Image 1 (cartoon, chains in turn cyan, purple):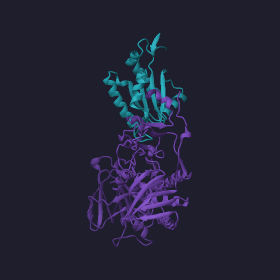
Image 2 (cartoon, rainbow over the protein chains, first blue to last red):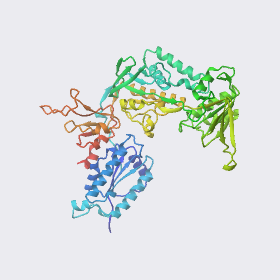
Image 3 (cartoon, each protein chain N blue to C red):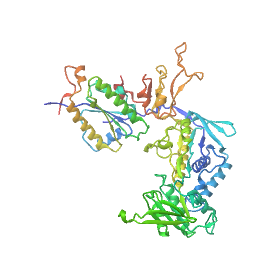
Image 4 (cartoon, rainbow over the protein chains, first blue to last red):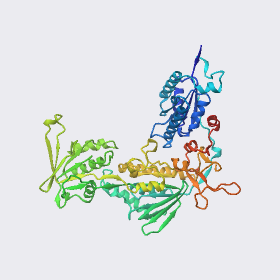
Length: 150
Length: 445
């Protein structure tokens, strides 16, 4: 049976998201199958464009793993990431996409479990939202992420 | 699963460092830092606003639980400072301007006489301390009121003979804590030490009124137990006690909290010769101005730096600028000394190689794309971005051959490579040199 496994792009801050991902890996926690991790030096490095391009290129959901508020090594990186994400959500709503596809998660270095849980939750919610309509427009014949056997 | 950022040390730039440091503030931490740095052969210029050094160190004669100890140590350091060939002392002067970045600061110091001195330090330490205010609101005005610093001086100056206050012998003393300075542990430690001396050396009756005792400092619990064993009486209060004058003594009245039934609580009245209050610790009102000059971030309540666990102790948001001592938060003198040592150590380590190798990740501006919108200089948390000006003018300027003079410029020595400016630049004129372009390019084009 063909099932929909949502594609998730996770932008991970090198200070918190990446160590958390490594910890999840060490602990052998299960993370959603169709996941792409993009390390960035600070969550503040993720541009608004990155978030939109990820959706355009076929991701069903994007998540930014940033440090906790008032805990950024670069003082304002996580806050900048958050404000850009809110702006991008605004743009999504204007073109008729669900803003829930973009999300930010504040995480600490030692939260491997939270990392895996958040991604699993995200995958479940994206399944409910359904595939990203943009992929169908770009490639009307086949949906990239439908057809992966579970 | 996870790719990590590449180490591209090849592109690193190196910046020569002079062994010169500017220390602002000649208090306990400023003096200690200057002393340590000078002994490791780094030239220090110590700038103090007042006429003489020492700051508030006079208030802490008992800080190691040995009367006179702090004074000896601080005066010993001060004596070394004036003799050392590596130290230039400038008193009665203040910082009025600072340009440049780590390795090449240009600091403008103005003396009281109006004379201006230009300095070129590699690193700057801010150790400007805090100010205290004597606040005796609601307490009847008489000769029965003193502050912790008065008591400290009295103990330091009185020898083996009995304590005298206004010519009268001192037999009972009441300390009232926690009326101000909510999260500062300094008062509690000073009161413990003073009450122990009063009790053991001068056989005074000592009462301490407090809300919650803050004993979370080295040997805090031990001092508290020692004070209890020596016979110091501690009373817990919730509402402000009532003060009244009885003859030439002061009476403090508070409800007895040991009885849990409110209606059965009796009033405790404590008659004493002297009421001692802690001074209110306030941030220096000039800190704001100094933050602006140094381009440092200001935290809540007018102190230096945010309340961010990544920036505890001496780190500031700029490379080469350190914050030490009570200007970030008033602490116990012992902790301040440790902090000063840490700052000196950090500077020695930073200046020791003689050159600074810029990190693998450094932002770079493509001057052709820069539209001078001033987004990045305003946004950079490390104040690493400035605007290159032509002939001192801040204008958009295109020369005949297509060269542009004005553009934003990232100082490689000051850049931490966080990429906030890269992501924010509306013209996409900034790139992160050394970044693994391939992993992010897929999302950028």
